[in-house]
Image (cartoon, rainbow, N blue to C red; front, side, top):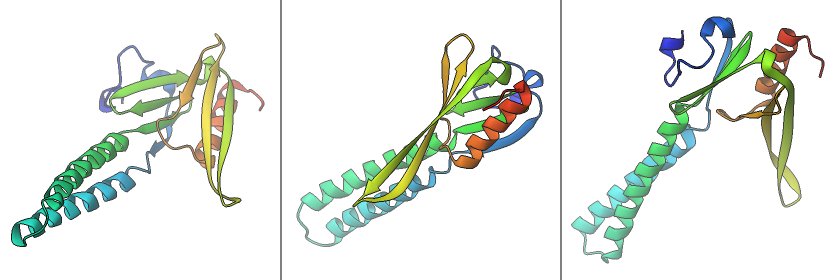
Length: 169
């Protein structure tokens, strides 16, 4: 299993130590930059084509090249986000960000801290963001940020930690 995970380092706990895989979560927000990148790139190509076919101001050529470049940048961002994964095992979790893997065993975790941020527009709440941090027995902390945190992911992390260590919330 460890050989199949890109970015998995030999110094990390072996998959046998993490136990069986319970759930895998992939970054869900990678589609937005990809769509924006494709739209900007297409608009840039259209502007360059229009500049070549019609007698338009030279500014449109510059704008088209800029949009194509920005489109490639957004597509690259989406490709990087798509690689992010969070693997929850019976005895720990493994988060993969691009090509870097970081494992954390439940027996090393003393507490799980979750913070909630709400965004408001015109007095109405429209977005809730969760941050999760694993506090270790030695005082170190690990931020779980490979994927966008959702309540069901947080619930599974807390449930697996409690089941593995017998801890109470």
